[in-house]
Length: 323
Image 1: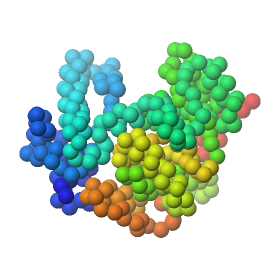
Image 2 (image 1 turned 135 degrees about the vertical axis):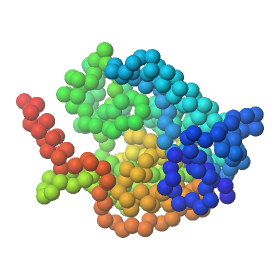
Image 3 (image 1 turned 60 degrees about the vertical axis):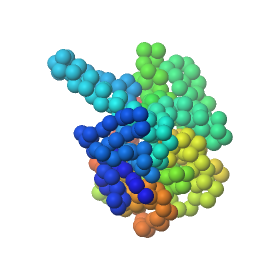
Image 4 (image 1 turned 180 degrees about the vertical axis):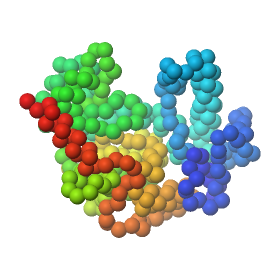
């Protein structure tokens, strides 16, 4: 079993080929040679951190000299385009199992289209709307007890959408936003590998008592097998081998809000990160996914997101704009 890994050195894969930026890469008629290794002959390739970019050019910094900024951007654009071509060629050749190819990143960039494809395939998604017309958005709000919003493309978190948000976000001079109705149940994040759910996490509500704490997550183990199987089928339907699906569990089937290819295990509490890294290693080497080595207790996320402070800020906002 020959495995190559790009962008993540934390995976416990013995004898893996580690691909790094700045190494010798050649794209020829046969396939791809990376630092002397023929990638088309591998069994599996894990690509971490290669995001689809649209537009490719980053925004200009007004404080930068334009000629220097332009040169750096063109160089970066050429490197990005070449790596995109390398990974696309591997996908076309059907050689190694790719976690995840460029096509998965492109498909996930359009979040509304992603939900539409899931709905057409028979999976449950929330009532949704994308646009910048105030009247239409307000009517959508009135039809639902709760609404959340996020940008239409790229990576972002769903946030509550109320009148105050509509006043600042919606208008013909502003980019459209994606809205979705809130559905009953817990909001869960399921990590999926090759159609199999490796881990499901819920986030505890903000702590209002005692000391401030970091964001706390708890493993979820009470979901029926068919519920988990549905999540796995949905991810596979979108052609993704490794992803995090955001769902609610208020009905017999999951309701899908988002699907993030190439999630970042390092953002999770250490026991959950270690478990996902071992699961990724097992998937790459075509072995069964390991059972969790942690218990049912919650764990804190290693990020400076203080849940109690956020709760206080939300309460202040509600009181500030109360009528």
